[in-house]
Amino acid sequence: MKILLLLWMFLSAFIVRAEGTVRSGAVWPDNRGQHINAHGGGILYHDGRYYWFGEHKSAETTAALVGITCYSSENLTDWRYEGVALPVTDTAGDELERGCIMERPKVVYNASTRKFVLWFHLEFKGQGYGAARYGVAVSDHPTGPYRFLRSGRVNAGVQPLNMKGSMADLDTLDVWENAEWWTPQWRRAVEDGLFMRRDFDGGQMARDQTVFVDTDGRAYHIYSSEENLTLQIAELSPDYTAHTGRYIRVAPGGQNEAPTVFRHGDTYWMVTSGCTGWAPNRARLFSAPSIWGPWRQHDNPCRGKDADTTFGGQGTYILSTPKGHIFMADIWRPKQPDDSRYIWLPITFEDGLPVIQWRDEWSF
Ligand code: DGJ
Image 1 (cartoon, rainbow, N blue to C red):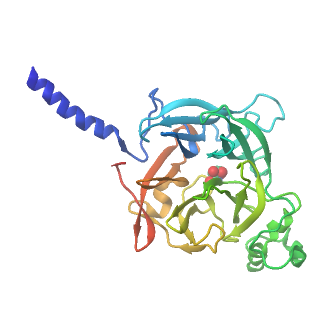
Image 2: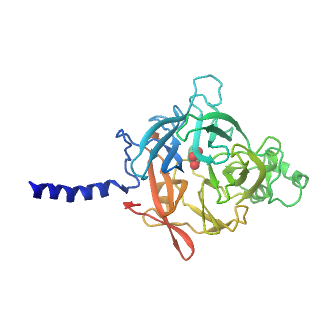
Image 3: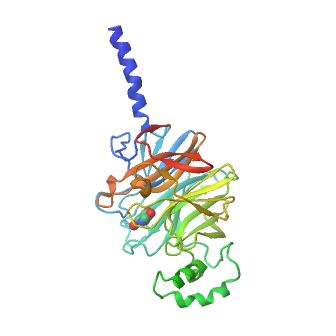
């Protein structure tokens, strides 16, 4: 009997270890045995717990029928469902009306206000991706409920910090507004700020997004703007709920989506995707000596199986822990969105550059 007990203890040690591993692409059950439903998500670490926020996806549509969900964990592998942090509403015409699009939520904690601040990409019901707005909500508790503050476009009437000259210098660009896309002259106009200028009065478009908090406590909203052609990085106010007006354009005309940002030492790194809807494409890597740039592009950071399509996924967040940085991505399944899967892989460094190597299974 004693021998059997010892054998069981020995075997169970291996079972626990197997449970504590990350298997990208597999079904990831929560504490209820249901596949985690938190896509395009991000992670907040607060008071010894990790909080994972993401898009709730249904079986039939990629639009929001439920809202933004929250899960929590102590070890990043066992996740407890915490409920809907910011729900859709049933009020016709409401900005968060069921059927709207709520994507890529990210939560940050503001130590001075003691509030949790949720940023996400919002599109109004029935308007496709035309609104291109940010949404912001706050809560006193990490799991919510979050109170929706407002949606908007970014930094109306303000010119980017890294623009040479004045807005009047861009007046000649308006002839390209209705011109044929993708011609060399049109591309040059885009790089010069065609869509930034078009949206100057009403505010800059904000679609795929993340929020990055630097070591000095300043936070930045990083988003695909200007018709998804150009990224922008905008500083957030000290309470993290608004933009300050300080922003830059990054990789003008480069068509980057899915921005994910981390800092390693004194270097800021950004991994993005190209723009191919829900279909995966090759990841891009950028670096800068300051959040304000200059940002420089490097080669694809992914290695191994399907490295040219980001392993079949698209980045959503980079979680920085004392042990290292973890690249998080989504394997989108637009035909059955709730069956979309997750990729989490550690970031290593080779010759000073971040590398994301595919691993079938790994542990923290
Ligand atoms: C790619 C984006 O990264 C996703 O978040 C989503 O907006 C899809 N496009 C929609 O096609």
